[in-house]
Image 1 (cartoon, each protein chain N blue to C red):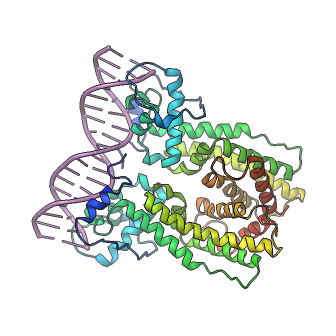
Image 2: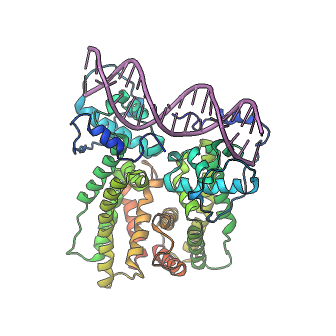
Image 3: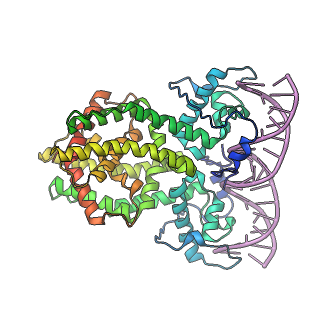
Amino acid sequence: MRACGFTRVCRARWQSRRGRWRGAAVRAFASGDHGIEGAMARTQGSRSEITGPLIREAALRLFARHGYAAVSMRQIAAAVGVQVGTLYAYTPDKQTLLADLLKTHMEAVLAEWHDRPDTDALTRLDHFVATHIAMSLDHLEEVFLAYMELRNLSPENHAMIAGLRRRYEDALEIILIDGQREGRMRLDDPRLAMLALIGMLTGVTNWYRAGGRLDRERLIAIYQGLARGAVGA
Amino acid sequence: MRACGFTRVCRARWQSRRGRWRGAAVRAFASGDHGIEGAMARTQGSRSEITGPLIREAALRLFARHGYAAVSMRQIAAAVGVQVGTLYAYTPDKQTLLADLLKTHMEAVLAEWHDRPDTDALTRLDHFVATHIAMSLDHLEEVFLAYMELRNLSPENHAMIAGLRRRYEDALEIILIDGQREGRMRLDDPRLAMLALIGMLTGVTNWYRAGGRLDRERLIAIYQGLARGAVGA
DNA sequence: GTCTATACGTTGATAGAC
DNA sequence: GTCTATCAACGTATAGAC
């Protein structure tokens, strides 16, 4: 066991320190490349507006690349160009940093998704696939992280993130059920088909690298074809 | 960075200790449940024949459950009911323990796979799917681990395991290419279809739990249907 | 807001007795 | 083959100066 793994002891100890955090989760989540890896430690100065996002970006990149458990707070601080202690002005602990990353991402995913209940199920499936792939390419690291690091969440955080993911998966399952009812899809088991499709789609983050041989539109079109085929359209 | 991450320094230091390990990888890989979690530390006694397998089983289970980086050698030792030092009579270091687990598994996967080049591509696809799912259900933790922990391998070990996995993926891709040539499959991009199918199949390890509502044969049949559909059969 | 310094548990790994 | 004891390095997190 590590010093302060997933227990809530640390949380309580920490909350008694100052009132800063009391229930306020970090919300903003800027993206983009700020050349984190090459950053060096500076020796003073306040830059509160940008340090927060930089920390989340560095944590995201490092967690995605090496895994949550393999990354130390020191590494994150070094990537940002800041001392370790500074991180704790932006997050109560490492666990919360991960949870905030995943929560923000999953909420963005759900906010991005707009079903089109007035169209046929196959069109809706195409739309789901396109949205998912586009999101995966634009936020490779987030999608990958949300897929890989569920098991490193504390029980409370796990329940929260799993709930969000569940809502996302349900959105797809509804489409499949409707498709079956409309007679546009032939499915033995809509739930299993949903899980299979999610696995197929999420797998993209395992091999996709920017600048590969396939452009975005083509990739989406191919996956739409695969998905349609899988559901028997 | 951790004390002895992926560097080869430790390896060299260790090799100078005794001749025991020089190139000899742990080979055997017993499976099954021996009630590891409840084991308690004993205080003496030699049981060389069973300790090795027990260590690998405990490591496999713990790595799969919590992730390689999150599991300590002490946890593994405790699960086996042995002291930490004892582990190092069976493996030079933690990294090698992981690599041996993955290598043994991937070699078993490749040994298990027998293509049937004299039959049609759709039958061969069915056979691949059935073999893969059966392997996944029989060795949930190995398949899951081989899928998740590639990034925690040292560069050398990563290259080795990735090579084995490549051979496995190629086996599927060949089937798809043949299917296209035979006119039995309609594919925009065989390589992409292969990656999508692998993602779909491997995803099973993320949600499958023994004793669920679907029996083995039904699960295989459903996935065969999904795979056939995806390739346009 | 950031730094420096530090507390203190845990880590991977080794040495040497039995 | 296993244990006990030990090491140095590193882990997360905190305190207090500026």
